[in-house]
Amino acid sequence: MSIGEYCNREVIIVNRDETVQAAAKLMRQHHVGDVVVVEDRSGVRIPVGIVTDRDIVVEIVATELDQSAITVGDIMAPDLFAVKESADVFESIQYMRRKTVRRLPVVNDEGGLVGILTLDDVLELLSAELLDISKLIKYEQRKEVRHRP
Image (cartoon, rainbow, N blue to C red; front, side):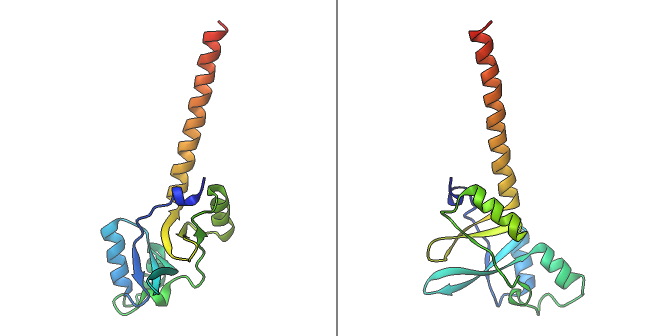
């Protein structure tokens, strides 16, 4: 299973020069906890950073800075970790754990943004897999009762 099959393809994006206030409004409008900062390189949207709701609270609100004067480029995480859409699901989960990130942009072979994998997505995927396994166990038990009364 590749991560490209499971990632969320509806990513909220901003440019580096957008204000933190504009990014916060987008997060509220789309009910998400992050925006991916992108640069347009020859028509390809390349992810260069990410800003989370927590970044805004800790960096701007808690320090009482002017959110309409500071850009997302000023507060975005300096090192962006991303994964190719062809990467394996469990490899991607391990990568998130190693890098201690809750959100992981998904890119194509050219480095263009195609989606995002979040901790919520991972939990949903894993819970669905566990549910399937539990159904299999029940099915096997019923099958045994029918064939070996």
